[in-house]
Image (cartoon, rainbow, N blue to C red; front, side):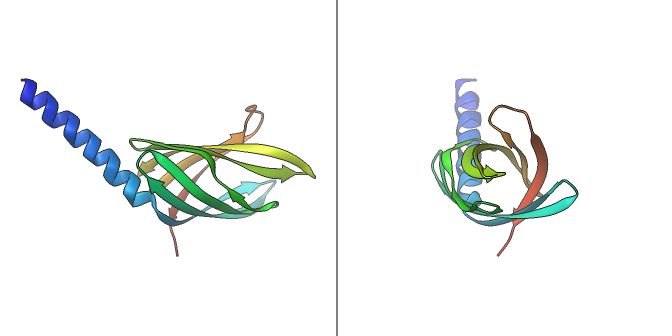
Length: 122
């Protein structure tokens, strides 16, 4: 029984590490804001449980990923952007699935948010 538990735990850990390694690279997604499509490009770099990189496509230009974390198939990070000339912190939470990363992106205070899928791009 103890061997089965250790083996299962090892497989879960390995799957998490493989998912993390698989995140590195370019990803593309799109959401709608006031009826206008907003394409985003993610340049992700995974290292263990850390996630770094950048997000391009928002009005403030290319934003550096901050507070990036990988926990199994879940990822989270934040970026600083602008809305109507004011700085705004956007929080991303995602789940890595077969068809891409399913993101929820929103303001830090929860007053606005949107769901979209990012797929591996070039």
